[in-house]
Length: 126
Image 1: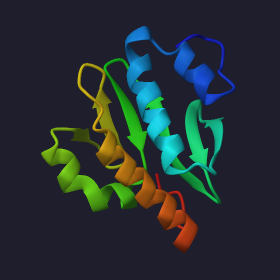
Image 2: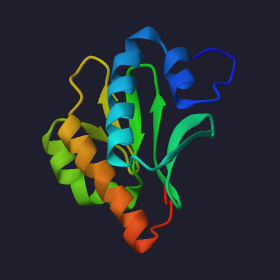
Image 3: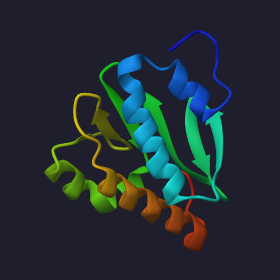
Image 4: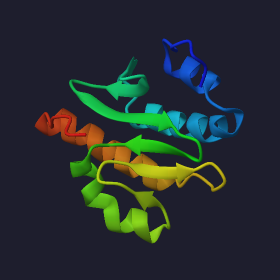
C-alpha cells in the first residue's frame, strides 16, 4: 500500500500490491453484488460496505486478503469455509492471492450478513 490514504474502495485496491489486486477486485465485485444498495467507505484504513450498519470489510495483507463478515455470520459458515481449505480467524476468512477465490461461498456469506442486518438489525461485532 502507498502512504497516501485511499478515499474509495477502488482507490484502495489500486494502491494495493499488484499481486493482491485480482483477488481484491474479485471479492469487491462479489460484495457489491451481494448488497447492491450498500454504501462504500474506508474506515480504519480498510474498505467497508454499509447498510444500516457495517456489513463487512475487506483488507489486503502480504499473502492474503481478509474478508470480515463479523464473527457471528462467519460462525454459520465456518465448517464449510474450513472444508474448502481456507484459513479463518475468529472474525475473518483469509483468501490467499495464489488460490482461486471461492466466489459462491463468499457470496453466500455476504448475503447472509446483509440479510442479518436488514432483517434483524444485527450489530457489527467484528
